[in-house]
Length: 178
Image (cartoon, rainbow, N blue to C red; front, side, top):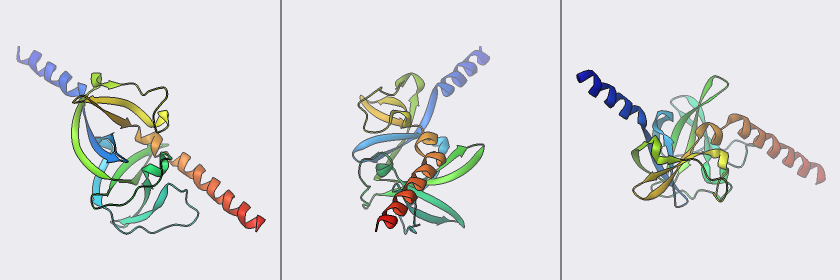
């Protein structure tokens, strides 16, 4: 009997996942807590020339250079206005078997929520303010929706590098025309 209860508890725990929720532009977003390394106060960023618009700059995090992405710009919805509760969430993403730390600017961190997998609906086919491939699902929590992000798509180093190359080509074309 004890083994049955333990198996049910393990299945129940596997059905629940924890997500860090945060606010950005008035919307509530969530990312899997296992992707989050830490949350730090918004501080001084070093601007790097020729970077994509959505990369605000880099920070020195214990000797490591960490790019900081403005999610609002990445979602093509303006720029994040830094306020008192603004912070940088350090997220670990994986690309081609490599791990990379990337910071994202958010308006405010809310809480860590447990969301059961049966409470997460597939992403909408249309109507979202952001690209649907950025959305892992729509979590239903206390009668409201939380947009669960696919951090490996949102923070794809390949996509960000392509944006950087495009920005460099635009600048070169402007200089050639001047």
